[in-house]
Amino acid sequence: TGKGATLGVLIKNAEALETLEKVDTLVIDKTGTLTEGKPELVSVEALNGFTETQVLQLAASLERASEHPLAEAIVGGAMARDLSFSDTDDFASITGKGVTGTIDNKAVALGNLQLLETLNIDSAELDTLTRQAETGRSAAQTVMFVVIDDQPAGLLAVADPIKDSTPEAIRELHAAGIKIVMLTGDSRTTANAVADTLNIDRVEAEVLPEQKADVVRQLQAADHIVAMAGDGINDAPALAQAHVGIAMGTGTDVAMESAGVTLVKGDLRGIVRARHLSRAVMRNIRQNLFFAFIYNSLGVPIAAGVLYPVFGLLLSPMLAAVAMSFSSVSVITNSLRLRHTQL
Ligand code: ADP
Ligand code: MG
View: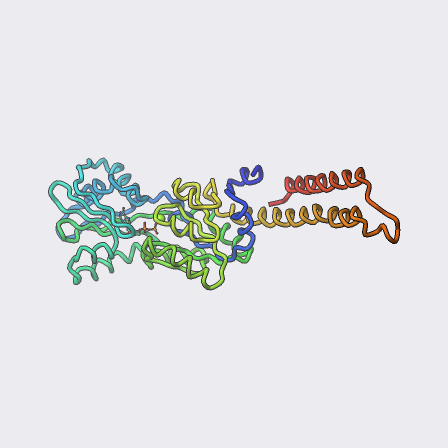
């Protein structure tokens, strides 16, 4: 644990430590990990006669009730523009899709295409809106639709820059023979834009929260040993399903509860280090088992008299006690060597 602390890695149980060594696939939630996790509002577009101020003011008022990182970005964007907020009635959060509510007697909805489909927004307009949204998405932005009284009213784009340490972390994970799967509820275009710059092996986008654990299950069914790294927002079941759940330190308490490993500093490189630690500890445990058994497997038969008929040799209790202590000393000395392991 002393080692782990300096690396910002907390390993909760022996099972997680043992499994880490065998992991060949890492599933990562896009927002919890790969990116900085501090999304910012980068553009507001108004449609159908609505103004940008109206769109952002209503969207941000709605998002004040949401705990999603996207909500924080939108509320922050409105505050940066000195907009005021109104009270929301009948707030509802539709996981993996967006949020709805009533503000100043207007029905306001904010979210992705699936949300608009759920709300039965006119399908002819959806095509045009999607095309408009794709521009920002191909620049890795998350683009959401704002609907006011069943009318598409605007587009909000949020950007979450890739963490500085991510490319290096991915290189190290690849070098360790680990395949990387990106898992996100965000659009395919956004996900691919992020994945392309990062050399990700596989992208699973537009995945609803309840399907995230299924993606992990499918990889496991194909005989992969899967680690899943996430922030606990919508992905706690997937964290629990994986062979090793890895909570990112920037995430929620739920994540830490569902996960065997926590990366306190949210740095993916911790996984590679934790794996080295896992390998060193497991090798050490096997050596210790050897030390523990070798004295016994030699000493016990001698004490029982196997050498007595031929050599007249028995093990005196005093020597047996010395051997027993040597066994413990060997184990402890060997374990202490772990303190010098290069991670
Ligand atoms: P992720 O896998 O990236 O954590 P989620 O499942 O939380 O994604 O959300 C998927 C998509 O649903 C988001 O990209 C966004 O378009 C929409 N969405 C979810 N929650 C909100 C919200 N509070 N406000 C706006 N859009 C949201
Ligand atoms: Mg999430």
